[in-house]
Image (tube, rainbow, N blue to C red; front, side, top):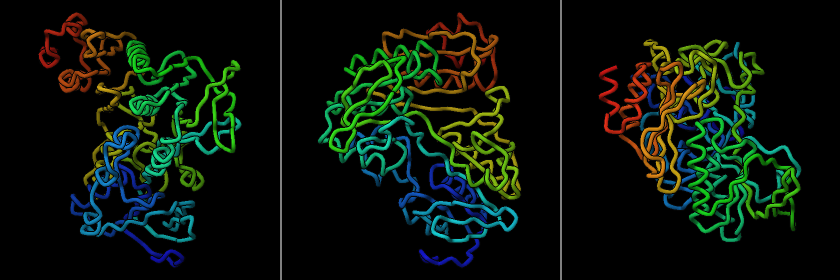
Length: 417
C-alpha cells in the first residue's frame, strides 16, 4: 500500500506493535503453519528489534543496531509477513473489522493482535519537554542521548527503577557525573525487597553515582533553550545537561478502549489473550490479565518473557489449539558487572531469606508467602536462578534453614519438597 493510499487493504492477521510480542506472534503463527496473510504495523521506522539492550549495550555503544534486530529483513519477506512501519493505529471499528492509521489508511483484518506496548511516562512539571530531556524506550530515544554525550558532563536520572539504574550504570562508566532521583525511600521499591534495594544503592554509590531518595522534582531549569538542571521540591538544584526520565510507561491502549474494549490500566484479556472485542487479542506490556503467580490478581507484566509467552498463547488460539496463559514470570538486569535474574513475583511476600553473602556480590533473595516460595532475586548466581524456578512453579514450602544453606543446592531442596 502506498503512503497516501486510503483504499481498504485486508489481512488475515494484523499485528499492531513491532516489539518483542508483535514479532514473536507473527513468527509463532508461521511456525504453526498459518497460511493466511500477516501484517505488522509499527510506529517506528525500524523492523522489530530487541529493547532491553537500549539501556545497556546500545547506550554504552558496545552493540551496533544491526545486532539488536530480532530477525534480519529477509526473514520477514521470506515468510510473507508485511512490515508496515512508521505508522500508528488511531482508530478501530470492531464491527467492520478495520483499523485506521495516522496516515488515513483503512486496513481490514480477520484477527487483530494488539501488541503496542506503551509510551514512556513523562514528567508533569514545568520544563518536562525541554531539549535534553530523554526517555529510554526506542532506538530514536537512545540515539538522541548518544548524540548529546560529548556535550554532557552532568546527568540526572529521574526514577530509580531498572531502566534508570541501568542507564546510570552505563553513564557512570562513561565518566559522567550521575545523580539518581527517586521519590520513594529506596530504589527498586516497587519490584524488589529492601535487601536488594540497599545492595544496588551501595553499588551505585561505590561507582560515584549520587542516589537521592525521598526526592521529588519541582521543575526542570533551562539555559539557552535546553535543560540545565533539576529543581527538587526541597529547593535544591541539581545541575544536569541531560535528564533521563524512567518513571514507567502509559499503556498504549486508547484506540481499543475507545472502541469499547474492557480495561483501564491496560486492556483486559482472558486466559487465551482475547479482549472483549470480537476477534481482537492483546499481548505484552499493555495486556491486563489475571496472573497465576500473583494469586489471580489482575496485573500487567512489562517483560520480554511475558510478551513472548503471550504471543505463543495467542498464536495457538488463532490456529485452533488453545492453551491458557500460565507462564512463570522472569526478568533480568545488568548493571556494572552484576547480573540480576528474577523468577516469580514477590507481590504480597511476608518474609525474605538471604542465601549467600551479600558482601561477596553473589547471593540470592528468596521470597516467601505463608511459607511458600513465590520468587527469587539472584545476583551473579545463575545456578540458584535455574534451580529455584522449580520451587516457584511447584509452589513449594521448603524448610527456611535449607533455603539459606548455600551448601544445599536448590535442586536438591526442590526434589525433597
